[in-house]
Amino acid sequence: MQLEQPLSEKEFDELDQFLLSDRCSEDAMTMDMLHGYLTAVAIGPEPIMPAEWLPRVWGEDAEDAPKFKNSKEEERIVNLIMRFMNEVLVTFEVAPKEFEALFVEHDYEGQTLIDAEAWCWGFWDGMELRPGSWNEIWDSEVAELMQPIYLLGADEIK
Image (cartoon, rainbow, N blue to C red):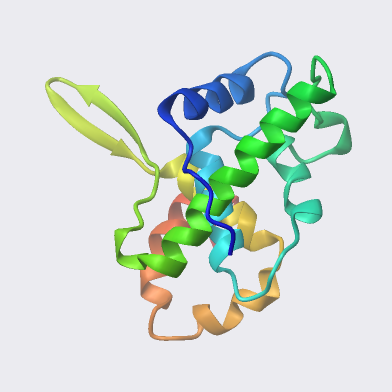
């Protein structure tokens, strides 16, 4: 596995701002959703190539592709996403116990509240790339650990 530098705070902010910009569709992932999505792709039971998972970062449909200024900007943004994915992969390979989901924090009346919903949506989207391959996990003793992701990330709860 190629070891690259993790995203700097400046690069993280650059990618965040691009995903939130009007050059991306309203359906483009936010950074917390992207992190959940990349986590599911990274740890899923079947490998998924970037050519398959990357377009979904921009939204559900092909017309959701971002409007890049030029090919240099496209290369830069895609490179930041790939490095973000590499961070997730390296963490699970080298120090899985140090993995931390990227949840949004909100300050409310002097308390910090953790909002995990977008991360779970992203994780669920990643699972949906290979839904049948996750059956073994849902049927195992760790299924209970998947319940929060299901409750916060699934479109419909059955």
